[in-house]
Image (cartoon, rainbow, N blue to C red; front, side, top):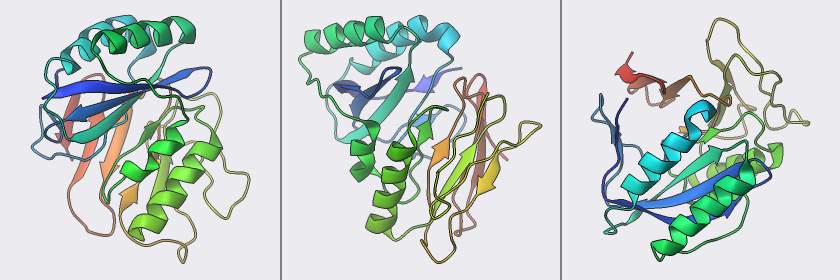
Length: 223
């Protein structure tokens, strides 16, 4: 699979928690994937951990080739050996004269726009997801949808039903769990993906526009 990374660089490496590294990236133009012409404002990508070292070396190096940047993108990268990954990325960022920031992924919520997509790891904290949902909803007066994927060992769940509960769905189908109907309105989406992130479904709700599905290991296609 090829990603169309264009005019991008790393601007920050964030120490999210014991198993995640958040990479802030600036790009000149919104990123489009090879098989689509539809750009989105924000991508959170979780690569297959089996290929984590190869991904980090090839992709992040490519992202540093051009520094004419405006739009911020973030990769939340799950690495089983967090210490090694963080120090490697820290050295890479320092060599490219970019800033290093520490913080949880929830601090990035202000970058969300209507229609933005957030891919979160299966053990991303409930607090971080809740803060993203709250911020996006207040800023854009939008509905926030949360979906999860099969093949995870446990479900993510908000302890209070006031926000969301997320449940597993069999046969590879993403289950849509809506918040209270009178809580939000609009079409921002927040997504919860499993560690491998094999399939992610992308939708713009309420607008009845394009529906896309993605298989991160192979292709992006219009459904």
